[in-house]
Length: 154
Image 1 (cartoon, helix red, strand yellow):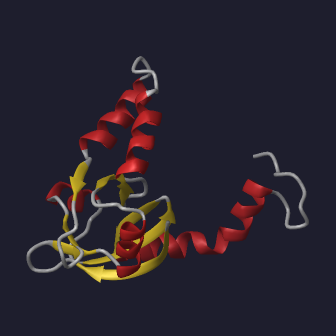
Image 2 (tube, one colour):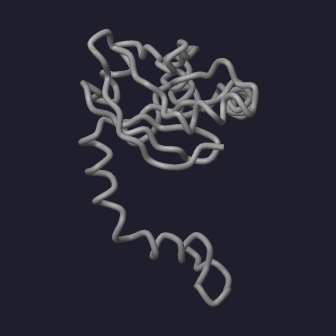
Image 3 (spheres, one colour):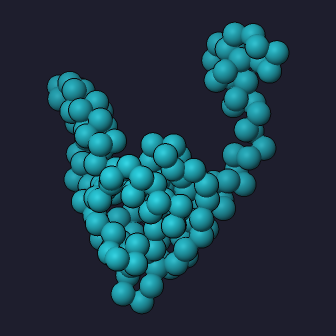
């Protein structure tokens, strides 16, 4: 549902405008609210309510007797908040989430199929520059060689 990369800025009141392409996807899929939480690689994950419920089901089924599962769930769910877009397509991100992702003003909003990610612009550029050269190698490891062979064991 979410694809592309868009640069936006936090306004003086702390609001971030969601790209119009994503707002169109909200309308097409009858989405009126979504959830934002701490993501991986110091970005924020943004899920529709349906996708959030899938994630919630998946993670709450992890055994609470497992310390890593407890730690992950605490950080992931304690950071979550429900957000609504205003009529201009803006959301207000809590300060603790902006602090987590080092977001001050300039952001990159990235569509990653079933979720959006919100990155500090500098963090996104650093991440992208660090991984773009390995894109083909990662694809080969994950999906096999380009000729259609089986994935290479890690």
